[in-house]
Image 1: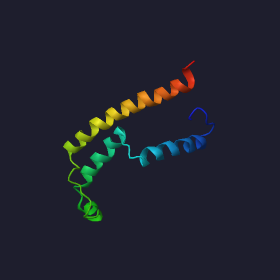
Image 2: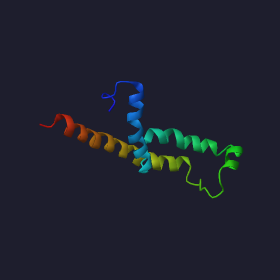
Image 3: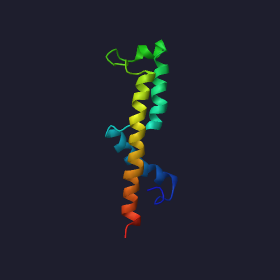
Image 4: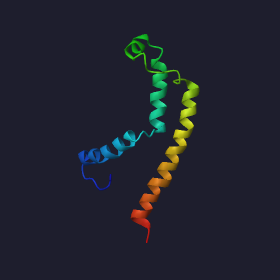
Length: 97
């Protein structure tokens, strides 16, 4: 999609739907998790932030060990999804005879 677009606006519009679909389906991305989970762990130490969060939200799994338990399967899934599924689609579209 990126190479088919001619302007920056076209490229931004082209990535909105795939990213929205990725998030809407509940998938996780390892690089995003490498930022947001540690940021959440650090935010737990700030009482002002914790006061804003609803008491019904369970943050007990937001730990370093929980982060490591999350990071391995998400990273492996991103590698498989990116290399196999994206590569397979490109092969099907452009390289097969």
